[in-house]
Image (cartoon, rainbow, N blue to C red; front, side):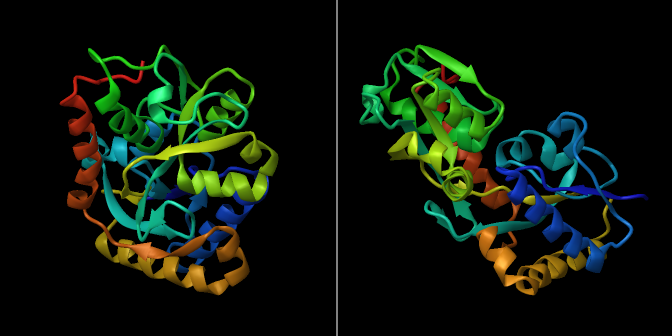
Length: 263
């Protein structure tokens, strides 16, 4: 098999994208040196299902909604960022810095931005936070799908939306690399925690290679401490699908209120 690899999830700035690519190159140099680093030239959902995928990072929501049948868990990064505890993360719910929203229950009927319908941090966790406030399955007046967390922040900053839930790791990277955008929003609340974005491999990858990848991840972490600090990495945990069932729990608790869609 001619393997491919990509880390597409936290490339908030070009400099950060270069760091992630260099980190991945170090991992592959040790564990699978013939692997090609690629850019996903198709939908991420299709990319994650590729039979030749050696390693990539996905979101926990699609993982628990069918993707787990095609991939195996390698590790979950632990980040040094507000809202992260071990391998678990939360989303920070933000609004415009000069806007009128100061609490969740003051956002009823307003415009919500979110990155993707299958995002745990941008959709599922926010839906869970809002569900107790919903009435007859509704709460927000309009939903704006932006394609990324940075896109959601820009929608708020440009007054195209009023509120959004942002993955706390992304928010930390935005504060590091896009401080003007970070200052354009302010915190309203936090969502509950769930396991963070896991590194996965195709089910075609054998067990010895998965173990080699785990070892190489740890070694790459310590090989370049300056880069590791820029990536806000602290370590890696080995979680199971049972751990990721927390994401389904958040979804099911929202559904008990009849709240199925943000708007």
